[in-house]
Image (cartoon, rainbow, N blue to C red; front, side, top):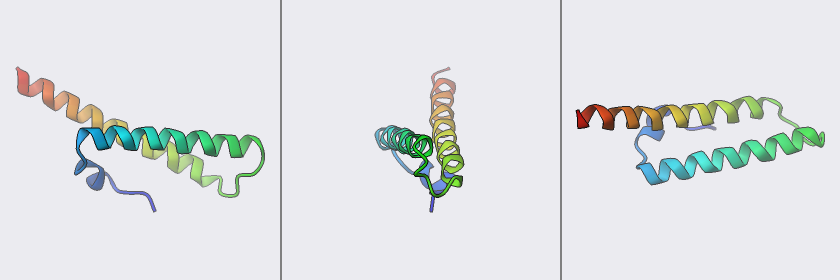
Length: 71
């Protein structure tokens, strides 16, 4: 089962970047399986895209928070 946003927020920046890379790899694999008609669970594509969006949102929140602290 996918992690929740509050679980991702507990990760440090390096680990968050690693999770984003892994999510993109998983999406690539799912797209390849889909194209070759080997994908069994089509909902996994949607979940992978949502995971990436969740991770990138958290990363962007941190960037905006860092900018606000600099001002």
